[in-house]
Each structure stands twice: as C-alpha cells, then as structure tokens.
Amino acid sequence: MPGAQPRIDRRETLPRPAVRNFAGVNRRGFLKSIGAAATLPVLGGGLAACGSSDSDDVSARTSQGDGAPTTTAGSNGPSGTSRSTNREVKVGFIALTDAASVIMAFENGDYADRDLDVSVLKQASWPATRDALLNGDIDMAHCLFSMPTSLASGIGGTGERDLRIAMMLNNNGQAITLSNEFADAGYADLDAVGEILRSRSAPSLAMTFPGGTHDLWLRYWIQATGTDATTLSIQPIPPPQMVQNMASGTVQGYCVGEPWGAVAVSQDIGFTHITTQDIWRNHPEKALVTTARMVEERPDVVRDMIQSVLVSSRWLDDLDNRAAAADVIGQEQYVNAPPNDIRGRLTGVYEMGASIGRRDFEVEQMQFHRDGLTNFPRRSYVFWALAQYRRLGYVDDVPDPGDLADEMILTDLYVEAAEAEGVDLPDDDMAAFDVLLDDVSFDPTDFDAEATRT
Image 1 (cartoon, rainbow, N blue to C red):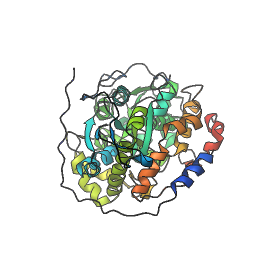
Image 2 (cartoon, one colour; image 1 turned 90 degrees about the vertical axis):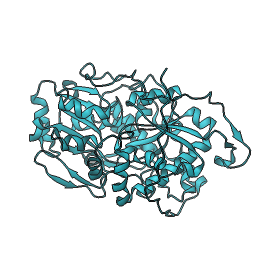
Image 3 (spheres, one colour; image 1 turned 90 degrees about the horizontal axis):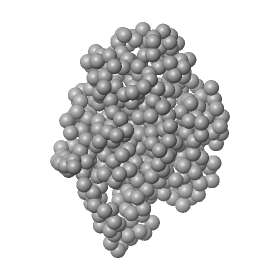
Image 4 (cartoon, rainbow, N blue to C red; image 1 turned 60 degrees about the vertical axis):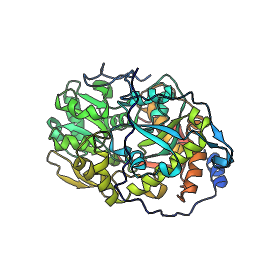
C-alpha cells in the first residue's frame, strides 16, 4: 500500500494580499436570472515511452477516513447549514504554473485563515488526478475544466458524472510548442504549419488528457490549419514529461500549460508556435474540481475553499506578487522548474524561441482573478466543450448541455463565497463569445450550430 505523503511545510515569507472590496449583486436575483438563460480513441496508437495511461497511480496517495459527515450546530455553513467539524481537505495538483492559486493559498495561509487543514498533494498525471478524485483519495483538485465533461461524455472516462466544478482557477497561459525542426512554421502561421504537418508522415503530437483543454486547443488548431487530425499521431503525456519526450524525438509538438513551453525554449528544444490566448483570449483553463460526495457531506468546507482560493487569485494578479510566487512554485515539491522559466510567462514576457524572439503578452498572459471575471464558472463553458466533442469527431452524441451544466457547476456555493469576499459576479453566464483563431462567435443558446460546424 502506498504511504502517506508528508505534509508540505507552510511558509510565511511572502506579503499578504490587501483585501479589495467589490460591489456585489443580490444572490437570489442572480441565480434566478441565470436559471432563465437558456469513447474518443487516442489517434496514433499507444502512449509514448514516458507517457501515462488511465491506470497511472497518484504520485503519493494519502489515507482517508470513511467520509461520514461530521457537523456541529451553528449557522456557519452555506445557507445556514451546520459547520463541518471535519476541516481536513486533500487537494491534488499537477506540476503546472496555473496551480499557483491553489499552492499560494496554502503558502500564504489563506486556508488556515478559514480553519481549514489543507494538504496539497502532487499528482502524477491527469488520469491519476481523475482516479484519486473518484476513489476518494483526494477531496478537491486543480483540474482541467473540461475533465468532468470528458468523463461524462465517455471520452476520458466511462460516463461518470460525479465531478463538480466549484470555480475557475485561470484564463490563458497554455501554448502549442513545436520542435525546432518545424521552425519554418513561425508564429501562428496556420498556412505554413498546415503545409508542414501534411508533408510529414504521421507526425506525432501530444496533449495531456483525452477531451481535456489541451486536447481541445490542439485539435481546434489542427482543424484551423486545414489538416485532417486522423493523419496525425496524437497521444496523451503527463505535463512534466513533455519536454523530455520532445528532446528524445518521441513527439514533434505538444500542447500543455506553462512552464513546459518556456522550458522547451530555454533548453533550445522547441519554440512557441502559438499561445492559447491567441486561439481564444481569456479562455477557461483550470478549475477547482470536487466530487458530489464532498458537496453533499461538507458544502461549507467547499465554500471556504473557494473563498481561500479567491483571495490567493486576487493576490496573484499583482505582477509583483507573481514574481515572488515563481520562486515558491518552482520548488521541487511543486512545479520543479527553474523560477526564471516560470516568472517570464507569468509576468507576460515570452521568449518564443526559434527566430521569433521576445513577445509581450501583458494583460493577455495567464490570469487568475481579473476582478472576479476569471473565477466565475460559466455554464457556457460546458456548452462549448460539448459542442467541440461533436464538431471535432470525438463522439456522435453528448449529454444534454443544459442538464450537465446545471448538475456539474456549483453556482450556488460560488456565489456565496464570492459575496463573502466582496467579489463581483458577472452577468455573462450564457453570453456569446468570440474564438479568435477562426474568427467564430459561439452562442451557447444555438448549440447545434457550433456542434455541426465544419
């Protein structure tokens, strides 16, 4: 049996965020208004030698009790519910820069401020994260926002509908990195890269989880280049193993979160061909995901976790704080990457590699809060992911978007947490938005138009 992972020591070396108040909105009116709004096979065969499979184990699992709800009298929980006496929370994360808000909430003491006993536990891969959530080995996770939809659609799972989205963690900050042998593709030149892809015999590309965000960005980009994805080998590889797979020649390109795009550049292995904010500016990326059981048994703890991460998210949107955070999250127990490779792209300065040079992504780099615009979990995101599953040929049928979004997104708990922290609540839950790469406007109320678009 795997042993328990040692708890990471809490550090109090960074300045605490100044609390900024925002005008809130009425929760009941908000919920009423939004209520009125309207098995992918992995192409190309097996995994890379250093890749993962759906049976990957969690890097370090922890024992968990029987999960019986323990509460105490007192109206300190959501909507007057009792306060849970079990304040222990195991939170999984993958070694990626966009885990920063989950990590820094621990480092800055934001969890402890709410009497939460949190362990942050590094996971080996996204399949390991999925299994740890479903098996109860962890309670919550820094997670691909579309992992729950992938599972429910039978792409990255077998139809499980047990996962819940508590909040969004970040926008932007992923990239498609190509090997230097593709350097003629340049920066975001779809015609050039399409010609290169079609001239090669089944070039091998990687993403991180079938139906996950990186898979969606990669396949959306492939289609925009005019290339048939079935002529390529596309395989899942855990994020920290992307660079070594490119260095060994196992893959010629990959889509993953930072810092693994920046690391490929700094090691002169590859270059950033396009960032995901070039595909869809301020796109949803990672979410704080939990389980139906956790919500049923300890809803107040879920709400308190959302509040804690809202505080750290706001703190991270100060670029001076990001520079300091890079030193922390770069440590071995977290991302395990050079802080300078993390810091540049966190603050918006991108060394792109090849002959592209440096580009400034100020305001368009990874965002953690944006005055609450980042963190609100919109139902339209679920609609978009499900539409892509059909449009890109993953599956013929998907769950009803409205039913799945209503079941999956914890709007009620998020609203309570945001109001408690004085964070604005956007009114664009089901509003249309633009995807820049192919200049398409997605209207979630016209789902079939996008799902059947060629």
